[in-house]
Image 1 (cartoon, rainbow, N blue to C red):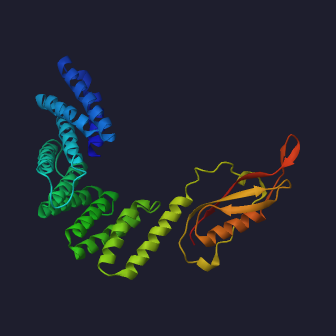
Image 2 (cartoon, rainbow, N blue to C red):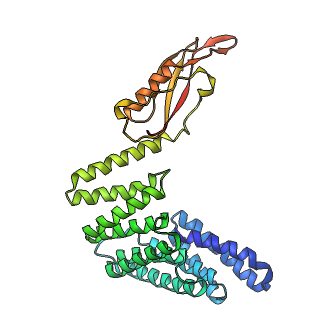
Image 3 (cartoon, rainbow, N blue to C red):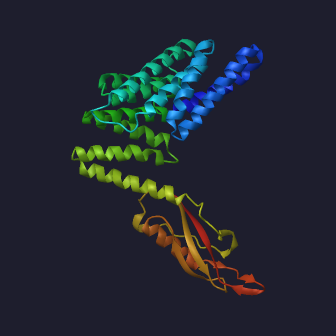
Length: 343
């Protein structure tokens, strides 16, 4: 959530200033830091009712000492995010009066924070883009679609100018706009922004493409709605490949790694039947080694079927020295890891 980011920024800023300020100011700002820390912890635990009065108190203390722009931005955005969080369980066309009131208050708080941000730190900062994105989401919930579109586009422009149009930040803004147009019913606009977001995301997340999955899932839903079944199926296969790679690189469950104990570690052959198929990752093979060091069982845990077979075949051809227990050879179990690179 955004208030975590601002709270940390504020704490760091205060450490540099605190020694030069009068004792009463130090006491007040220390109180604000403590209050903001409580808000953060309670919000993480979704204890919003407990966090709200503390956030209000923090804002009250900060307004009494308006010299610190950063502190006031922190207090405003903390309270804005809490008001928004209190509306999480209500969505749709018929919002209760209380929900509408909270959303409008959140919008007012963000607008005030943005004005202070621009006055103190200039236009087109990363923080302004974050706040405008939140404003866009609030307007969507209120079905103020023109205002939502304007805020989300402004956030995209800021991120393009500040971080570059091929950055992860711009990818996030493009996805936000694509999701907005999909929800609002402008399918052609949604299609355009999903395409642009995917093109940028492929470069921004070159080594780890799992952040692309939420985008791809929404993109697939849009294509199905537009009766573009063939394109949707291609993207579905893309999601599966990313998920396979994600699982393939997780070796946290390896109990007894045997690669370094092999007399001869056979290297798997890259499967010819899928020579042009993209795959990269680590395949974990569970093995049973007999008293003579021969692999008598091999079962891959993960990976596409052809790669699992290649890894299992290689494991069975590998050779290990005998393992002794009290001077006697015994059967052992463990894992062999095989790293596959795309060809």
